[in-house]
Amino acid sequence: MPGQGLPTFPVASAPRVADDVALTAPTDDSGKWVISAGATHYYRAGADLVELLGALDGRRGVDDIVAALGDRWSHERVLAGLEVARRMELLDGSDDDRQTLDGRRVKFVPPLTVQIALTRRLDRTFDALLAAARPLAALPRRPGLVVLAAVTVVAMICWAAQIGATLDALAGTLTIAEILVVLAVSLVGTAVHEFAHGLALKAQGGRVNRMGIMVFYLMPAFFCDISDAWTLPRPAQRVRVALAGITVQCSVFGITSIAAAGAWAAGADGIQRVLLLIALTNIAMALINLIPFVKLDGYIALMSWCDVNQLRERSMRLVSDRSLAILYGARVPPTPGVARWRWWYGAGCMIFPVVVIVAALGNWRGALAGLGVIGAVVLALVSLYLILVVGTLVLRGLRRARDFGAALPRMIAVTGAVVLALGAAALLIRTDETVDGSFVTADGTTYLVSTDAAVLDALRAGQSVALRENGIVLHRDVASGELSGDRLARDVPLTALLPVGGLDLDVPATWVRIDGVDAPRVLDGLAEVTVGRVSLARSLVDRFVWPTALGRW
Image (cartoon, helix red, strand yellow):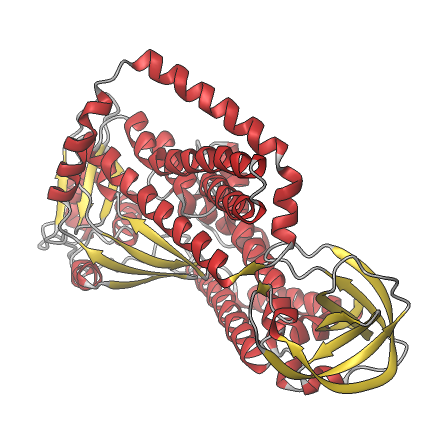
């Protein structure tokens, strides 16, 4: 109740457990019950929460529930338990929304994930796959581990010997055919990754609820719902399920690294480049999946090992509640016995997604700039959506502070001071204002080329230009120079604007000569022109919210 530091559950109600909630008694020494809500929501909980749920018959009010549970349960403790049950969507009314969501093929998971379920009838598929894999399971264990260790060592040696070639591939361009091969193999590897999760779960007696495709932080991927792993009694079993997919991509990395070394020895540079990119893609996906700060395999493994439901959300709430207490004086309930690392982990969970998204936008900004207005619109829409997400989270935090007794005058004063401080910093900090284009070298002269009228309007003679490689991932420095005043209209190959080779297509563009560049080591790439000094606020808006291609403001 506001002003008293208690949860906001309505005291006068007669709560009832939802019809689709099921309770499974402990099957090991942990004493944890498994609570399932619908087809995809699983929790491991202690006996106290189960005891409280058993008293929620829809006929008792809070006072009657306290009396029925006995002396161990105070009024405040029952309210706190009801708030937990409400957040876990275990109470009557939650199942209507849950059944609607569980029945949908398309599901949006904030902030930037869309899941599309392709199938839900998977038992026969996984039974057949397990039967096919049974001969492998029957092989002697020790010799298999020796062979695996030997292959791993060979793969790492092959990879280390080709690091230079890998960096060149990341900083270079690919043909459409090479891009399609890398994407196709990577997508197949990701699909096998998800099937490995399902097989590991099925082999230990679990059930796969859904599989499908998704867009995860702007990247295509597959998913496998392994929520049923919470029914497995031992944490080690759940960790094996969570990490099964990563072993698949590590295997693909090893195989393609060895194959790339073979292509290198045969002088097949193009094949080597593609194989190295496939290897790098798979090991990168394996390492990214191990990061525990977002809802990937590493997080599920950590949560399973700690045997804590919603570890990420609970840890972030610890940090959020502590911040609300410090800033606004909110009287949030204490959390005794929480390990210190959970606070640092919660802070990492808050910060890491922001860093990833900003880095991704920054990396793709140059390529999107080459698409003119279309690329600018895509960048602006993604940026505006992220601003909306951040604003929603801030408002949610303010409401929670108010619910837990924060004084409104203090909230207004502190929030105003924070906004003013951030606004002042954004206006007072000065940074270079830049516009993006491309460069080409023709007849011994280097030119900035652009199809964007807004970029061309910002260019002046004498402005400094940084030239970089337009690689698919890396943008290494090439040279620097200054713009001249000479311009000419000429077609430019599309391959000079995008990190794609083999396209026999020219587009009309304006060429601006760049002085002071001596024989760059690459003939085309990205060009970044410093056009002045502006505030940090203006720079961020120009780069992400209202890119130059949309016109000057």
